[in-house]
Length: 159
Image 1 (cartoon, rainbow, N blue to C red):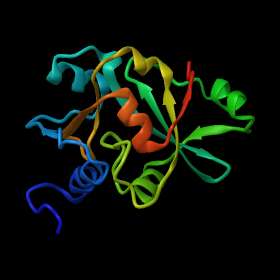
Image 2 (cartoon, rainbow, N blue to C red):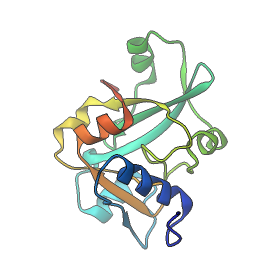
Image 3 (cartoon, rainbow, N blue to C red):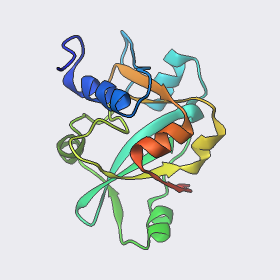
């Protein structure tokens, strides 16, 4: 049964955490936290501990890159590591279609179907990570190892 007190995308994230056996660490804020800088300010943490969930297009399908809030993804570097062609930022409509979440609130989990995911290895330096929880007002905490396992992500240098 869906949690009626939160928007559906956030309820999907909460369900994904529970299904994986993790504690519900979702926090909802009265202010919007659509950027890593805004989230870090509200949470009182280093912006590098914020996990941005960035959706790109690769060969017509979605590619989710979980990157440190302090990193700018080098798509040419990532494409080289993957042996792929061009990786480009997805449109807001493409992101919503594949994640069920709007740009600025995309979570690493809670999507309609599994998305190929890459994990910025620099995030391993932080004992606690914070990620978007499905909308512009919510974040959840998770460890690097939990995030890697939960998303079946490939660790990669993204910058």
